[in-house]
Length: 489
Image (cartoon, rainbow, N blue to C red; front, side, top):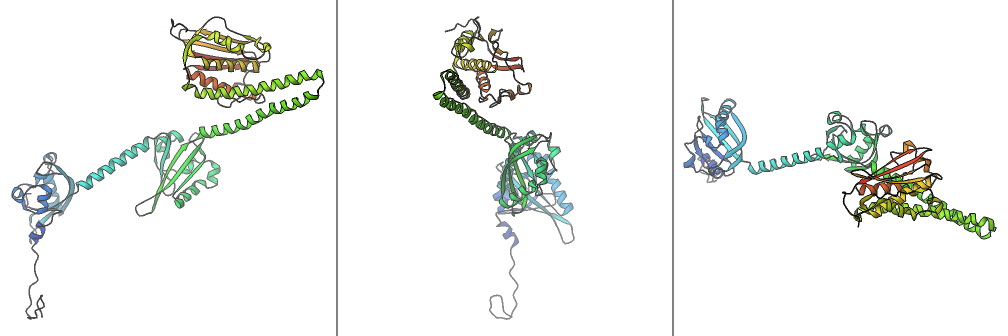
């Protein structure tokens, strides 16, 4: 045999032993200490000195309870941990501990019971690791996740929900409840396919979208969805596939935005553009036709043809006025200049510049002065629009313009005895591009009354309408009354 140095003496040598105490003392990342059976410190390594700030002379002989916060000591936690280690063999605990300088650190502690050869408890081995940085990061992440959870749960403009890999709803925010009408208790655990129309479900659209999101990472789609009450809404939906740290699909995030109003506006605008193209084309075609006819027409017919050309020109002019009034109403907030003036006088001056003498002869105008403090240009447009409509839709009978004042309101009314507005149109008659079912063949933009409402609401006023088919219409405008005693400039 040879020795371990290869000397070949033939005499066996004993293997070198490692000095365990020296090894433990040189461990810097862990505080490794020995306790007797009562918890008194018996040994102290370099890691303990670095972590806790005490030297061996300062620590040995004292109770390990000195590292625990006051609350934990009062609760008896140190002895509870020794009892648990005694009964189970070892115990692991995490919590705040105290350094010599009074600062705290988050520790992972393992206490192991130590026994002699006869199985009698001789003490404990205590290993402590500093996890303060990890704990701080974990708490920060937890707070961030909680803030994000609160943010998502309280967002009301978007329905944000989580789906599992099969499309079952796992979370439900306030926006989802507001948009779709279901509470979280009613929605969680059900398939997201319940929001789709019957036609889409039969066509397999919900699962097709999940497949697309799974393959492409995300999918965005526009379409009709169904609320709890059965009503439909037009929405933009984004479904995003979610994966765990190993790349496995864990579910989907689904964000839904209600675009019903935009859809309705787009449809209304498309209808409007088609209608306006037709309405502008009709009088222009008529004017061109009558212009050709008047060249060769006998004298007795020329006057009639010229009158028809003039009437169609007026029709075009009124449509242009409606468009200008509508655009002005949209911009009025940047140009409104309130001033004190006599509303009755403004009505008289405005109407005198409108229409023919025959038409104006039917208009009954107010004479008694009523002051109002608002934007003059806005009220001129309102009077022009309302009186113009009344003359257009009542071919005979008076059009009455009235002004009056109560303690806090000034009222302007325009009434006629024309054909009226259908009852089912009254709720929407002030909406953009709405002309009413009885006026579809009259031309026009459907923007006149919309402009009136915008102009009046910009002045903190209110407009309403009453009408009976075959009897006439009354439009009432109410504005805040000026403080008594103000003098008109």
